[in-house]
Every structure is written in C-alpha cells, then in structure tokens.
Length: 192
Image (cartoon, rainbow, N blue to C red; front, side, top):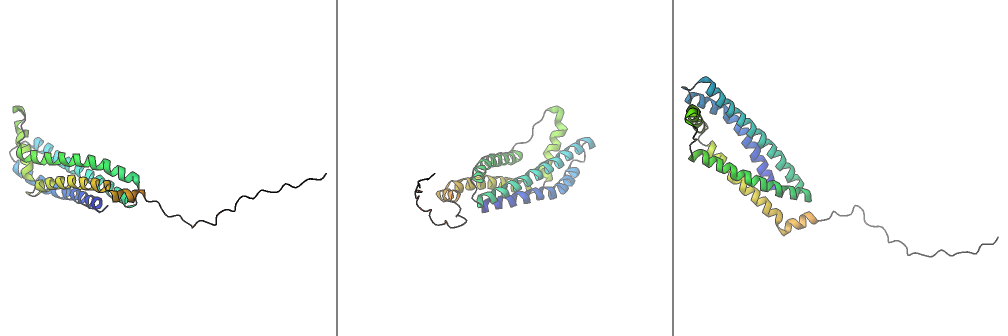
C-alpha cells in the first residue's frame, strides 16, 4: 500500500513539474529557433504545450488510480489485488517504453527527409530547451516506475498477502444459544 501511495505522489509531482517547466522550455526554444519561420516555431511550441498538457493529465489520472488501488489493497479487497496486478503489468511496460524514449531522445538524432530539414532542426532544439535535469529525471522516474510496479506485484504474490486477502471479517454479534433439540409434538386424540 505504501509503495502505491508513494508512486501516486510521484506521478502527481511529475505532472505538476511538467507544467511548471514548460514555460521556460518554450522561452528557451523560441530563443534558440530565432532563424526559423514563425509558423514552424509556433507549430512546434503548440506541440510542446500539448505534450506537457497530455503528460500532466496522464500523471494526474495515474495518481488517482494508484491512490484508489492503495486504498483497496489496504482494505483487503481481492478485486483491488487483481487490478493492481493488471495495472502493474501495463505500468511496467509503459515505464520501459518511457525509458526507451528518453534514451532514444538523447542518443539517436531525429532523421526526417530533406524536405523536412527545417523541422528536423527545430525538433533537435527541443531537448536542449528543457532544463538539463529534466530528461535524466524522466529517465530515472521511468526506471523507478518500472521497479515500483514490479515490487508491488511481487509483494502482492507473497504468502502474507494471501492471508491478508483471505481473512474473514469477525462476526458482528456473538452467536446466540444453540437451538433446542427438536421435540416431537404429541398428537392428542380428538373427540367429536
């Protein structure tokens, strides 16, 4: 439960940080792209702002889902346990994809056709426009996300977790006295 709550807080913080960073990133990008046409720069800025918005919304949704699952797991709900396993699988895949994106963004330059050469140069400026700590932070969080989901999935598979989810709630009231043994009712003769 604690790992899920920690992951929810980190997802929320990352989404907020992305919204806070985008303003300075856009300013640095515009300054670096001074020689490009205004339409191309505006289009790329719109892409930057849209990606920051989508990332913030996705992070917020992830935080809400993870917090809800943490509450469900803490309450011992078996459905929450199964859902956490499914979310952990999807989250681990997304974390690996995010890490691959961050590594690819830094190591492989974008190659577009010769007709799109100005766009290639603009997209090359995007990574440099972010603060120097932003891309390593994203890569580190992708690794942490993947490890967090794996830890949660393993913890929920342990025997102690089985006992937690199979426990029965205590009866509300102590049982009453046992019922009396069945006594046959004597049949009395009837006089007419």
